[in-house]
Image (cartoon, rainbow, N blue to C red):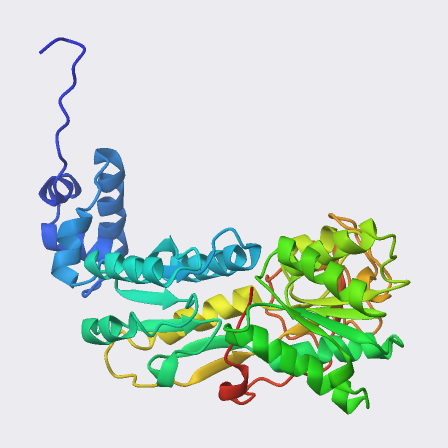
Amino acid sequence: MTDAEEFVVAVRRADVARLAGTSPAVVSYVLNGGPRGVAPATKARVLAAVEQLGYRPNGIARSLRMNRTMTLGLVVPDTANPFFAELARAIEEAAFATGYTLLIGNAAEDDERQTSYVRTFLARRVDGLFLVPAHGPARVLPELQRSRVPWVALDRQSPGGAAPAVVTDNRAGARQATEHLLAHGRKRIACISGPEDVVPANLRVAGWRDALAAAGVRTSEMAVWHGEFGRRAGYRGARELLSGGDYDGVFVASDEQAFGALRALQQRGIRCPQDVAIASFDGIAAAAYSTPALTTMAQPFAELGRTAMNRLLAQFDGTSADTTTSVVPTSLVARGSCGCPDPPGGDADETPAAGDSRAAGETPAAGGSRAAGDSRAAGDSRVGDGIRVGDGIRAGHDGNESGGGSA
């Protein structure tokens, strides 16, 4: 040993108790919030001793005593997709607020990799799981059921209602977006959507068809293009659709695809929205910063995160057998790509839209304006600039019809 070397001495709970003039049991009550109450003066001495000694509880030992690791797992299809990144952030915020640490796995749109992550999280004894199925959780479902670990399906329902699910109303949202294009006088509206084996993509196509049929448009004459949820696919889809038909509007099933579609229009010298109007789906933050900014059906990420966390916590005491689907409504954010006024981006202040019931002086979320009827929870500001149109999409829509999600 040299003089420069230091000895690291582990601080024990008994050391904290000795310095605070109390017992190790009382230290435990203070650090764990119970089960017995502690006098304020004693609690203050314990916390001061913890700070002075730099005491850190042994997480492994604590997990063994509590039979809880205070960790949760989340598996998403693609972490490079901004929709899943924002959804993961919302889940992490909800988990952190309740004292849990979130582990995230990227399935990379591969069922085998998805299964591998689920097995890894189960082996690490996570207290619960969130799963956004890559294509369908059928392969991993038996293992989840045998493990008895509580889990929640996100973005789409689990097969046979095996677990609670939290989804957005994809069909109603797609219909509203298409109706908004129709209200702008567009009559020939094509559709770019996601893979045909992904339920949310099909539900959004169904909503697009619903709106056209209700307006008396023959859907058989309007083209739909399926591809991956991504910018490259949106670019290819727009090029192919516009090469083979005369359209004045496009409903695009994800913001990421819509970015690619905007690029394809620009390269062909087609103006948006003057020649072709676009409305999309998801409401990711980047949608406020394209040119023109995207009109989009915004998914309320914070609400999705809180709802999913509550559905998971309800299972922890072993008494909840509720496997129903929570359907969260989307809301239309109107921007320049459809023909609505294109608000400034960034942190620019804007005048609230007519009918906005916010208190005078309240700052619009992310520089945008919300119209009356916006049911978004306070503090969920990731949608970005735009005018919220509260057209009354109903929560509680039939879960079998709306059990999907996104990109």
